[in-house]
Amino acid sequence: MFYLLGLGFAVGLSGVLIPGPLLVYTISETLRKGFVGHIIILGHILVEVGIVAALTLGLAAFISSSTVQRVVGLAGGAALLLTGFYLLRLSLKKVEIAKEPGAKYTPLLGGLVFTALNPTFPAWWVSVGSLVVFESLRVAGIFGVAVMMVGHWIGDVSWYSFVSFTAHKSDKFVGQSAYRALITGLGIVLICIGLYFLL
Image (cartoon, rainbow, N blue to C red):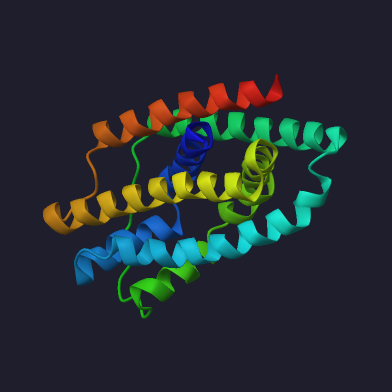
């Protein structure tokens, strides 16, 4: 179970560390309303509950197929490798986060909307997300999926709460050196996980 918890945490955190609409919204909403990252990420989690339920119900019947497992393993492993290399590449650049003025959504609704509008979100769940759901089902069935998602959401809540708290206290984004260290380390972890699934 610790394996699934750690897998969900590492893979989930990789997705939220990539700058996107939800990150920009979290920072801008925090600057306007204070510490609200934990509320925003709840909206994100609600979207993921629906996606994971659909994946679990749709894929559970095929989990015993070795052919399907190989295809998902190759596709997901490749996606993890690409994401890992992308994070390493991102760590070498200066990350610019633009302030988003005048958002009309409440933090919870904003979490829903900006999750859905993130162009990397559907692709991530079709490739990497389906891979970890498959692995969780294989190891421990539906309970395994639940454990993996708890780890995933711990990563989500931890990161967005940290970003929101930092923005609230310092009125600026996390320092470049700290951010680069985080995504470099996670990029290396993702590459290792990707190689594991490919092999």
